[in-house]
Amino acid sequence: MNTSSIYEDDEIIKLENRFNKFLTQLKKKELETTVFMNEIINFVTIDRIKAIFPKYRNEKVFNDIIKELCKALDKYNIESKNIYEAVDKLLGKNSIPVMTIHKS
Image 1 (tube, rainbow, N blue to C red):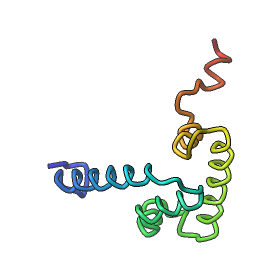
Image 2 (image 1 turned 180 degrees about the vertical axis):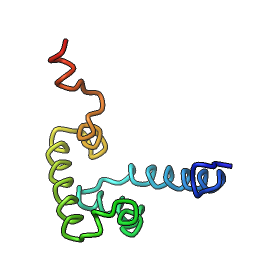
Image 3 (image 1 turned 90 degrees about the vertical axis):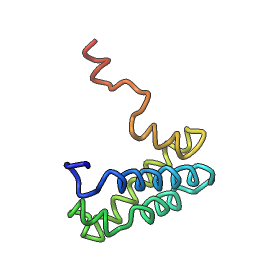
């Protein structure tokens, strides 16, 4: 049993399998950025997001952040092969932080 969570181990495995299936299906689709974001939000559910991150209970704040995220993804998507590569770039995967270079 997983004692650090409200979920039992088998529930965690089910959630992980459901998430992996969702990602697999999502990757098969060529989606515009806002549609991509809406798919993710619908999967996670707004209620869960607001429960975990109380500042997003303010609808204007939530919508503003989603808009900014979509703008950033659109920017990276122009330079990328697909939305998934754009997400990696936004997260800084496979990049060296500037301060690391500066300290060298």
